Length: 450
Ligand SMILES: *[C@@H]1O[C@H](CO)[C@@H](O)[C@H](O)[C@H]1NC(C)=O
Ligand SMILES: *[C@@H]1O[C@H](CO)[C@@H](O)[C@H](O)[C@H]1NC(C)=O
Image (cartoon, rainbow, N blue to C red; front, side, top):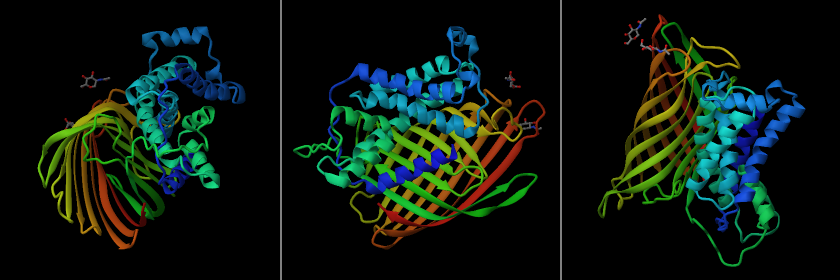
């Protein structure tokens, strides 16, 4: 699992560095049979591995187990670890989604494939009872991850290049979205040079790659733990223009990936925020204010803290100084968390289930100032409230505050410093003591503007 995460991280990093390509022509033709077959193959591969290589009991699926799993009262929350439920399952869902997305179907047409694939796996992929958490995380997380990997893989391939450079691009794109690569091979698009420049989306992409030192502490009522300094790498990508009106999902998205030398996990952050729809609230020559609905995927796991969730946010985006060299952007919004995984220190069972599941609501606000294109100051706040539906009977308030300053020192090179904290308050019923915990963090890094 750790190795897979690390490899995945490195590949995406390389892919991002290798980007600068044009989009390829989207396959206009919808290929239902191939899409459906690929979806079935993405289910059969892990099942065969479990069944024949691992000889796992839970993979011995038969008519009786399927019949049992089809009954509505068979559904049961599972006991898997945080990484399995909040990252591995969404990653698998990304393949279900991609089986349709890379065969000519749009975002909305491919989304049901993520739900169908997830349902099929829960019912017939294992003998285990189907789990509602898996169904939701696989489907919603799969859509977010599937759409960004599809768009990034298309960005990597420049269809006018040839030779070794093109082969490298094709391989990188295949690693970012395997089904897109497979379909490019089947379609004869692999390495093919198109005549005219046929950039399908033309969406710009910018990024920030940083390497640095970070530090997490833990303050609870009982203890005060001073964490270690850890080396980390982080990649942030911004695809498309956030301030552009659009009805097409994910014409803008931001993506953040962080990995580091913690001792509980190497993959520390995967966050996706994709705009489903953006429309104008008010615009004049110097300001623009837009409404935007975003779909979000969060995976945060480090030595001090973990949080995972699938959510939707309605926000107002403002660009206050369109004409000026010094910019000010703000965002304010609110939304729902369809399902959040919140750390619970009283819980530990199964494969390492140490978190509660529950839906929630959230508020978010952020401000970014860019001074003369050289100095960026970013402030972010997010507050959420959850009501657990599985685990301990509790409700939680999670507040996240962070600030970062980045200064360009030479060409694309920059220095960054940031501080922040997660504050978790848990209110337990059934005699467990309430918790109030603070997880402050700090980081210092050197980065490259991509
Ligand atoms: C949780 O606690 C509330 C309030 O005491 C109660 O109404 C509810 O039934 C409890 N739920 C469970 C699953 O125990
Ligand atoms: C936990 O917090 C709730 C809400 O503030 C309160 O009603 C409850 O009494 C607290 N429980 C304990 C054990 O202090």
